Image 1 (cartoon, one colour):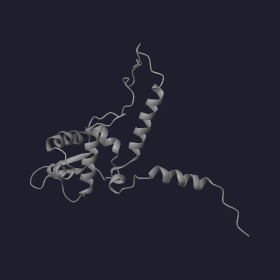
Image 2 (tube, one colour):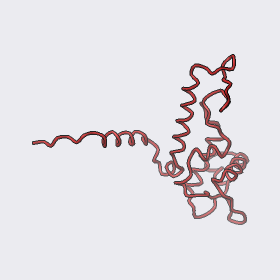
Image 3 (cartoon, rainbow, N blue to C red):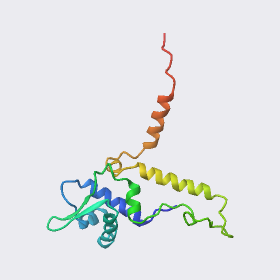
Image 4 (cartoon, helix red, strand yellow):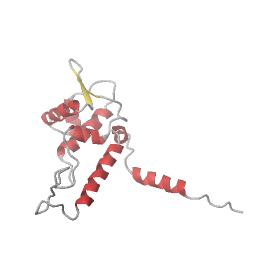
Length: 160
């Protein structure tokens, strides 16, 4: 599975926009300079992000783009899907009874890859733009798993 440049750049640009703060609109040229992304490419991405409802544009002097909601409410999956980036791990057409194998049957590992795609989507749906901006990603699942494990453990007997 590969996430294309479109999805990666859209997330990078949105993190930049969120980091710039909510006090003023941010121009695409500012984002392009900071992230080293082509301005024309950003224009294409932001047209899709606006249509997808994750950003809003402000016209006129001092105009630019702002988040359409607080960064804690915007999910990474929303950004990727807004720029038409499918989270796909199989070669088969989604929802089609035809498979990708030689005789239009499903390959033996189809269910494995399909479940991986669901897990990736679930993870990206659980991460907010705010999580990325505030650097709450690294070790996230480890800490959650450790907390759950510790809370499920019986209390140790008191030492005498």
